[in-house]
Image 1 (tube, helix red, strand yellow):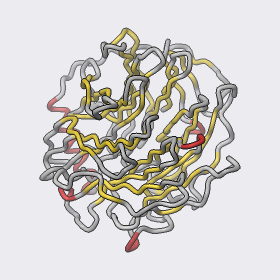
Image 2: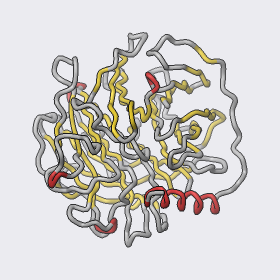
Image 3: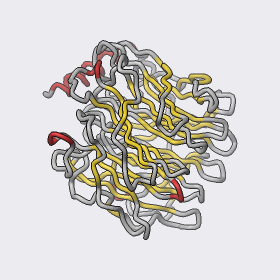
Image 4: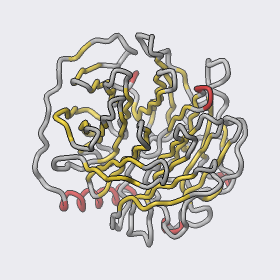
Length: 407
């Protein structure tokens, strides 16, 4: 058993000892509906929530919606240690997703091990799609000193494929927990990751950001965005997001003195020139929980979601102060809750989704809860089995107020 596997098993035991054993109230699945989508996309209608399987048997789906209402989706296929990313699109008037396009220009250069190292997607100026991911051992080009690269590409002008992949890492090597990407309407693109940049200790890792001011044509050398006193949890994922007002946000997990695994929000309102950090939630743990986080946008502010001690939470962020307004936990007893996703609809209802029972080389289930505009859980909730090994869930809202969960 590897060091990473031993750490994960240790975390599972610690969290199970601290969590209630009470079972969740499980909602039965409705009759499966055939909506004629891409092969492998079984659909289930759960009131306001529609469940959809990832196209073509893929894992780690990630979805964004552009200003026209079109849904853009990427997913992973192949060996978890070295596979490929595929992209599909569905406009509001389309009955089906488009034919899949491979995102990475070099085959088998994407890593999906551990749930936290997969690809992220963003939609930017003019609806252009941007994708970034941690390179596998086979990935080219390499990072500095032959290190694992942080790779980036964007949809070409003809919308027929993706440009050749590029490494944006110029200095800050030491990828482990992958990275993330954000793009705004002004043409800024941000690729973010955490690394030690010469320091191996987690407590000395930092979050780094490489910025492009020309829609991804060129990137400046990365800059540090986090306080070096916090460290960064080496095998935890992070999340980047650009809001409609072009403010830039990131969520990451600290590793202060290797025992304080607190969640931090980083915000920049000057195109990544300066950064403001806010402590979101404390967690004392002498191990890496291999957690992921989520950021989305509502009509009233930014939405963030994260995990702490086997529970998942969400909060709205005041766009003026970049401070959390209220942390709201998922109701009921936990069964190793991880990997949250969060989104609002046009009625200011919030859908929080998370996985349960997942671990190293272990799939699980997903659970969801809808909250009203006051943050109170409604009667609309549910559960579904079958989240694959190494996978995640993603969500998006439809114009009619319903939600889609892809898993």
